Structure formats: structure tokens, C-alpha cells
Image 1 (tube, rainbow, N blue to C red):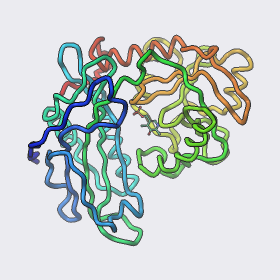
Image 2 (cartoon, helix red, strand yellow):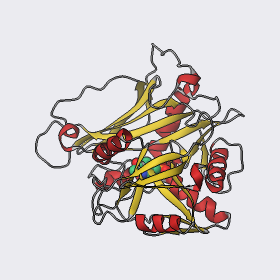
Image 3 (cartoon, helix red, strand yellow):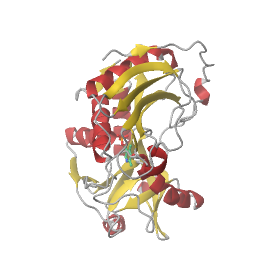
Length: 353
Ligand SMILES: *Cc1c(COP(=O)(O)O)cnc(C)c1O
């Protein structure tokens, strides 16, 4: 399918690279494609960035058929632009689509659309250290209809947002509150997808943690509230003794691409990496015995977030005396070196735009 291009006549003022923050600015163009029952996905196009007009009865507003992805484009010192494992994001988008009864996207077309959009908005990709261009593909149901069933019409879009360095002054450990009342997802539900509804479900616990001075929530399983699932919108890792443990993908955990990259990198360094169930009690017992060496979270936005403190119902433990762990730092450095093209890419993770 040919992708049409309509360029803007009103390019925006570029923001200062030091003021970018996260998710505040959007580029001049966006990719749009429609789905109509009977016709399928059609009319792929790059158009000036602009608000959408939707019918108030559009099904996304009422029944929440909305899924998204999050990835980044990185500017290298030699001028190349790299994507990190984009095909994995696109495949995951289709897994989210499948679970929410949204018609599958053509994965090659999506990658092609993304590359073309990045060419059109190439001068929006920031190049100062630690900055990147955040990429947000998403699908919403836009058929005007009241009554619960899958929509017959959808819109797929890609928008781009230049973002600042997540860590302006190096990695700093965060404080985590273990949530024992609210849950994010349950097995059999949509926790393994990037469905918008998961984030709506997480807001209350997140706000609670914030109000108590914690930067993130650690989510427990939705059935027994015993097993560790995720940390905010990132995956959890614990270095206990010489074993790097991450909760196994059980249907309610989002399988992060950073998580998978951490597993592969650490294993390649000879570290024993285990994907299994882990209870909060095991974490606290390991701390008690002096075996909890490091804890960190992984995700596209921050790459690696070292954890300095956990609070579980008022029982506070500190990890590695609140300092950054050696493994967390090494993983952060290695992953970002690959993403910014500063190091060899032995796993073939990067894709040149
Ligand atoms: C996006 C996300 C992650 C991290 O996935 P990455 O592919 O590593 O960015 C982890 N958990 C949740 C709930 C997420 O939404």
C-alpha cells in the first residue's frame, strides 16, 4: 500500500532540547490509517499533526477498545538514527490487538510507515546526550455505536514526541511502595497487553504511592496478592545471591522488550537468570539474610531504574544501602550504548532508519 504524504505549511517552533521533559511536545506530522469492516485497513497517510474529530458515540469512549505501544528513535554521534527492536513492538501491538478484538495490522507496513514518518520529521529527533524521540503507535475504536461488541471501525496512528534525558545527573535509586489493596491486572485479563484500560486501573494505586512519598507502585498478583508482578509500568528484577530473578510471564504481566534484553544480556555475561514466581515474603527474607544485593526495574522510558527502598505495609527495607547496584549500572550502560550506536550490537537489536 502506498503511503500518501501531506506536509505541513506551519512547522512548529522547535522546543529547547534542555526543556523537553517527557510527553510535552509533538512533532509536525503524524501517521494515520483507517479500518472499515469489509474494506480492511486502508488509506495509510502522513499528515500534519492535528486534533481528531470523533463522534461522541465512538466506541473507544464507552467500551475502551484502545491499545498502544511505546518505543524510541535514538540519534547517534555519527548522525545515524536507530530504532531498538521495533519489530518486537509491532508484534506486541498485534498481540494487544488480538486480545481486544481489534483487526491485526500489517507488520511490514507499520515499520515502513514509522520509518517514513521519521524521515519526514527527522529534524525533530533531539541529539543532546540522553535525549530521544519517543514513538507512540496506537489504535482506537471509532465506530459510533452504543452496545457492547467489537467496533467495526478503527483508527491506527503514530505520533512522535521529543523527550529529554530521563536521568539528568546519572542513575538515581527510587523508592517503591508495595500495593496490597488495589491490583493492576488478573490472569485471564488484559495485563499482558498494552491496553489503555490497564493504565486506568493503575492510577489509584499510583496516586496513593505518590501521596506517601513513593515514586512507584510494586504490583502484586490479583488473586493472592503474594507474588510480585510489575513495578509501575516497568518489569521487576532482583539479584538475590548470584541469581537474577524476574517474575515469569503469566498472562497478567506485560512482557517488556527491555526485560527480554536484560535477560539476554545478563545471560550472555554468564549470570544465572531465572524467570519464576517470587513472593514479597521471599524478597524480604532474602533481605533479612543479607542476600538481596540489587533490585531494579526495566522499561523503554528509563531503561533501568535502580531501587533503593521498598515499603510493604509499613515494613521498610533498603537495598544496597540505597546506592546504585553494579549490575544495574552495567545493564544501563550496555543497553544505552547499543541503542545510541556507541557499542557493537551482537544481538542485532538495532534497525537503522
Ligand atoms: C510498556 C510496559 C513495560 C515495559 O515494556 P518495554 O517494552 O520494556 O518498554 C512493562 N510493564 C508495563 C505495564 C508496560 O506498560
